[in-house]
Image (cartoon, rainbow, N blue to C red; front, top):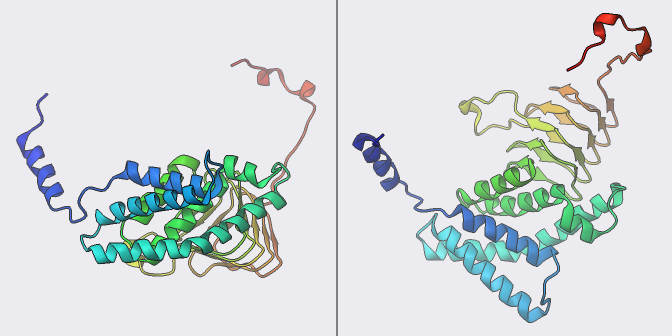
Length: 276
Protein backbone atom coordinates (compact mmCIF):
# COMPACT_ATOMS: atom_id res chain seq x y z
CA UNK A 1 0.00 0.00 0.00
CA UNK A 2 1.40 3.42 -0.99
CA UNK A 3 2.01 5.94 1.78
CA UNK A 4 -0.21 9.00 1.35
CA UNK A 5 1.39 12.26 0.25
CA UNK A 6 -0.43 13.98 3.10
CA UNK A 7 1.41 11.85 5.69
CA UNK A 8 4.74 12.37 3.96
CA UNK A 9 4.19 16.14 3.95
CA UNK A 10 3.30 16.16 7.66
CA UNK A 11 6.40 14.17 8.60
CA UNK A 12 8.61 16.37 6.42
CA UNK A 13 7.16 19.51 8.00
CA UNK A 14 7.75 18.16 11.50
CA UNK A 15 11.35 17.27 10.75
CA UNK A 16 12.01 20.61 9.06
CA UNK A 17 10.87 22.36 12.24
CA UNK A 18 13.01 20.21 14.52
CA UNK A 19 15.22 22.86 16.09
CA UNK A 20 17.63 20.27 17.46
CA UNK A 21 18.65 18.87 14.10
CA UNK A 22 19.81 15.28 13.70
CA UNK A 23 20.64 13.63 17.00
CA UNK A 24 22.73 10.45 16.72
CA UNK A 25 21.58 7.98 19.41
CA UNK A 26 23.99 5.30 18.18
CA UNK A 27 26.97 7.64 18.55
CA UNK A 28 25.71 8.60 22.02
CA UNK A 29 25.56 4.98 23.18
CA UNK A 30 29.04 4.36 21.74
CA UNK A 31 30.42 7.39 23.59
CA UNK A 32 28.89 6.24 26.91
CA UNK A 33 30.31 2.74 26.42
CA UNK A 34 33.78 3.95 25.41
CA UNK A 35 34.01 6.40 28.32
CA UNK A 36 33.11 3.55 30.69
CA UNK A 37 35.78 1.31 29.16
CA UNK A 38 38.46 4.00 29.43
CA UNK A 39 37.57 4.72 33.07
CA UNK A 40 37.09 1.20 34.40
CA UNK A 41 38.06 -1.64 32.05
CA UNK A 42 41.54 -2.93 31.19
CA UNK A 43 42.82 -1.89 27.75
CA UNK A 44 45.43 -3.36 25.43
CA UNK A 45 47.51 -0.24 25.92
CA UNK A 46 47.16 1.41 29.32
CA UNK A 47 49.96 3.96 28.93
CA UNK A 48 49.36 7.57 29.89
CA UNK A 49 49.95 8.56 26.27
CA UNK A 50 47.18 6.23 25.09
CA UNK A 51 44.81 7.47 27.78
CA UNK A 52 45.41 11.05 26.65
CA UNK A 53 44.53 10.03 23.09
CA UNK A 54 41.41 8.22 24.31
CA UNK A 55 40.22 11.25 26.25
CA UNK A 56 40.90 13.54 23.30
CA UNK A 57 38.69 11.30 21.14
CA UNK A 58 35.97 11.28 23.79
CA UNK A 59 36.07 15.07 24.00
CA UNK A 60 35.69 15.41 20.24
CA UNK A 61 32.75 13.01 20.20
CA UNK A 62 30.98 14.84 23.04
CA UNK A 63 31.52 18.08 21.16
CA UNK A 64 29.90 16.57 18.06
CA UNK A 65 26.92 15.34 20.09
CA UNK A 66 26.34 18.71 21.76
CA UNK A 67 26.74 20.43 18.39
CA UNK A 68 23.57 18.71 17.22
CA UNK A 69 21.70 20.45 20.03
CA UNK A 70 23.24 23.92 19.86
CA UNK A 71 24.84 25.72 16.94
CA UNK A 72 26.86 27.96 19.26
CA UNK A 73 30.44 26.58 19.15
CA UNK A 74 31.52 28.57 22.20
CA UNK A 75 28.64 27.11 24.21
CA UNK A 76 29.52 23.62 23.01
CA UNK A 77 33.14 24.01 24.03
CA UNK A 78 32.08 25.40 27.41
CA UNK A 79 29.97 22.30 28.10
CA UNK A 80 32.68 19.89 26.94
CA UNK A 81 35.32 21.61 29.09
CA UNK A 82 33.04 21.73 32.12
CA UNK A 83 32.15 18.03 31.81
CA UNK A 84 35.74 16.85 31.59
CA UNK A 85 36.80 19.19 34.41
CA UNK A 86 34.15 17.47 36.56
CA UNK A 87 35.19 13.97 35.47
CA UNK A 88 37.88 13.41 38.16
CA UNK A 89 35.29 14.04 40.90
CA UNK A 90 32.75 11.83 39.11
CA UNK A 91 35.37 9.09 38.89
CA UNK A 92 36.07 9.29 42.63
CA UNK A 93 32.34 9.10 43.38
CA UNK A 94 31.97 6.04 41.17
CA UNK A 95 34.89 4.27 42.82
CA UNK A 96 33.10 4.78 46.16
CA UNK A 97 29.91 3.35 44.61
CA UNK A 98 31.84 0.29 43.41
CA UNK A 99 33.51 -0.17 46.80
CA UNK A 100 30.07 -0.08 48.45
CA UNK A 101 28.98 -2.97 46.23
CA UNK A 102 32.16 -4.91 47.03
CA UNK A 103 31.71 -4.32 50.75
CA UNK A 104 28.07 -5.31 51.07
CA UNK A 105 27.45 -7.88 48.33
CA UNK A 106 28.84 -11.27 49.41
CA UNK A 107 28.79 -12.40 45.77
CA UNK A 108 31.31 -9.71 44.72
CA UNK A 109 34.95 -10.79 44.93
CA UNK A 110 36.76 -7.77 43.51
CA UNK A 111 36.33 -4.28 42.08
CA UNK A 112 37.23 -5.67 38.66
CA UNK A 113 34.22 -8.00 38.91
CA UNK A 114 31.98 -5.05 39.82
CA UNK A 115 33.22 -3.06 36.84
CA UNK A 116 32.85 -5.96 34.44
CA UNK A 117 29.65 -7.63 35.55
CA UNK A 118 27.37 -5.46 37.72
CA UNK A 119 24.50 -3.74 35.89
CA UNK A 120 23.68 -1.73 39.02
CA UNK A 121 27.11 -0.12 38.89
CA UNK A 122 26.81 0.59 35.17
CA UNK A 123 23.43 2.25 35.76
CA UNK A 124 24.98 4.36 38.54
CA UNK A 125 27.82 5.37 36.21
CA UNK A 126 25.34 6.43 33.53
CA UNK A 127 23.33 8.35 36.13
CA UNK A 128 26.37 10.28 37.37
CA UNK A 129 27.56 11.38 33.93
CA UNK A 130 24.04 12.24 32.76
CA UNK A 131 23.39 14.14 36.01
CA UNK A 132 26.49 16.24 35.37
CA UNK A 133 25.22 17.17 31.90
CA UNK A 134 21.75 17.79 33.36
CA UNK A 135 23.24 20.25 35.87
CA UNK A 136 25.01 21.96 32.96
CA UNK A 137 21.55 22.36 31.37
CA UNK A 138 22.55 20.48 28.24
CA UNK A 139 19.30 19.65 26.46
CA UNK A 140 18.15 16.16 25.39
CA UNK A 141 21.56 14.46 25.73
CA UNK A 142 21.23 13.55 29.45
CA UNK A 143 17.86 11.91 28.78
CA UNK A 144 19.20 9.93 25.83
CA UNK A 145 22.14 8.76 27.95
CA UNK A 146 19.93 7.73 30.87
CA UNK A 147 17.54 5.89 28.57
CA UNK A 148 20.49 3.88 27.24
CA UNK A 149 21.12 2.55 30.76
CA UNK A 150 17.40 1.88 31.16
CA UNK A 151 17.29 -0.23 28.00
CA UNK A 152 20.52 -2.04 28.88
CA UNK A 153 19.93 -2.76 32.59
CA UNK A 154 16.21 -2.32 33.28
CA UNK A 155 17.11 0.43 35.78
CA UNK A 156 15.47 3.81 35.14
CA UNK A 157 17.17 6.73 36.93
CA UNK A 158 16.19 10.22 35.84
CA UNK A 159 19.30 12.42 35.40
CA UNK A 160 17.66 15.14 37.48
CA UNK A 161 17.61 12.99 40.63
CA UNK A 162 20.16 13.83 43.35
CA UNK A 163 22.05 10.82 44.70
CA UNK A 164 24.71 10.93 47.42
CA UNK A 165 27.94 9.03 47.95
CA UNK A 166 28.45 5.24 48.14
CA UNK A 167 25.21 4.37 46.36
CA UNK A 168 24.50 0.64 46.12
CA UNK A 169 22.10 -0.99 43.67
CA UNK A 170 21.80 -4.77 44.02
CA UNK A 171 20.34 -6.77 41.12
CA UNK A 172 18.49 -3.65 40.05
CA UNK A 173 16.02 -4.77 37.39
CA UNK A 174 12.82 -2.74 37.56
CA UNK A 175 14.14 0.11 39.72
CA UNK A 176 12.59 3.52 38.94
CA UNK A 177 13.98 6.73 40.47
CA UNK A 178 12.09 9.90 39.52
CA UNK A 179 13.37 13.32 38.55
CA UNK A 180 13.04 15.16 41.89
CA UNK A 181 14.13 12.28 44.12
CA UNK A 182 16.81 13.15 46.68
CA UNK A 183 18.88 10.26 48.02
CA UNK A 184 21.47 10.60 50.78
CA UNK A 185 24.75 8.79 51.38
CA UNK A 186 25.26 5.03 51.83
CA UNK A 187 21.80 4.10 50.56
CA UNK A 188 21.11 0.56 49.31
CA UNK A 189 18.29 -0.23 46.89
CA UNK A 190 17.19 -3.63 45.62
CA UNK A 191 15.31 -4.72 42.49
CA UNK A 192 11.81 -3.53 41.71
CA UNK A 193 11.90 -0.42 43.91
CA UNK A 194 9.94 2.64 42.77
CA UNK A 195 10.69 6.14 44.03
CA UNK A 196 7.88 7.91 42.26
CA UNK A 197 5.27 10.65 42.23
CA UNK A 198 1.79 10.58 43.72
CA UNK A 199 0.45 12.80 40.94
CA UNK A 200 1.82 12.79 37.41
CA UNK A 201 -0.17 15.75 36.07
CA UNK A 202 1.73 18.15 33.81
CA UNK A 203 0.85 21.07 36.08
CA UNK A 204 3.21 19.66 38.73
CA UNK A 205 6.19 19.41 36.36
CA UNK A 206 8.18 22.08 38.23
CA UNK A 207 7.27 20.90 41.72
CA UNK A 208 8.95 18.43 44.07
CA UNK A 209 7.13 15.20 43.17
CA UNK A 210 9.40 12.40 44.33
CA UNK A 211 10.52 11.27 47.79
CA UNK A 212 13.54 12.03 49.95
CA UNK A 213 15.68 9.12 51.16
CA UNK A 214 18.06 10.03 53.97
CA UNK A 215 21.48 8.54 54.77
CA UNK A 216 22.06 4.82 55.44
CA UNK A 217 18.59 3.68 54.35
CA UNK A 218 18.02 0.18 52.93
CA UNK A 219 15.05 -0.36 50.59
CA UNK A 220 14.28 -3.97 49.77
CA UNK A 221 12.79 -5.38 46.59
CA UNK A 222 9.37 -4.32 45.36
CA UNK A 223 8.95 -1.37 47.71
CA UNK A 224 7.05 1.66 46.37
CA UNK A 225 7.67 5.09 47.92
CA UNK A 226 5.70 8.01 46.48
CA UNK A 227 5.31 11.75 46.90
CA UNK A 228 7.45 14.87 47.06
CA UNK A 229 6.63 15.39 50.75
CA UNK A 230 7.54 11.83 51.71
CA UNK A 231 10.81 11.42 53.63
CA UNK A 232 12.37 8.15 54.73
CA UNK A 233 14.39 8.91 57.86
CA UNK A 234 18.05 7.97 58.17
CA UNK A 235 19.07 4.40 59.03
CA UNK A 236 15.59 3.07 58.30
CA UNK A 237 14.96 -0.33 56.72
CA UNK A 238 12.10 -0.56 54.22
CA UNK A 239 10.93 -4.12 53.71
CA UNK A 240 9.89 -5.70 50.44
CA UNK A 241 6.57 -4.94 48.73
CA UNK A 242 5.53 -2.08 51.01
CA UNK A 243 3.59 0.96 49.77
CA UNK A 244 4.60 4.25 51.44
CA UNK A 245 3.12 7.72 50.90
CA UNK A 246 3.96 9.32 54.27
CA UNK A 247 7.05 10.15 56.30
CA UNK A 248 8.95 7.37 58.03
CA UNK A 249 10.88 8.39 61.19
CA UNK A 250 14.60 7.76 61.44
CA UNK A 251 15.75 4.26 62.43
CA UNK A 252 12.40 2.68 61.57
CA UNK A 253 11.68 -0.81 60.31
CA UNK A 254 8.78 -0.87 57.84
CA UNK A 255 7.49 -4.20 56.60
CA UNK A 256 4.45 -5.77 54.99
CA UNK A 257 3.02 -8.58 57.09
CA UNK A 258 1.58 -11.47 55.16
CA UNK A 259 0.46 -14.89 56.33
CA UNK A 260 1.92 -18.02 54.83
CA UNK A 261 0.43 -21.42 55.63
CA UNK A 262 2.19 -24.71 55.01
CA UNK A 263 0.15 -27.89 54.94
CA UNK A 264 0.81 -31.51 54.18
CA UNK A 265 -0.15 -31.88 50.52
CA UNK A 266 -1.06 -35.54 51.02
CA UNK A 267 -4.25 -34.36 52.73
CA UNK A 268 -5.39 -32.17 49.83
CA UNK A 269 -8.74 -33.10 48.28
CA UNK A 270 -8.70 -35.04 45.04
CA UNK A 271 -10.05 -32.01 43.13
CA UNK A 272 -6.71 -30.18 43.64
CA UNK A 273 -4.72 -32.91 41.93
CA UNK A 274 -4.46 -31.73 38.33
CA UNK A 275 -2.00 -31.72 35.46
CA UNK A 276 -1.17 -28.76 33.22
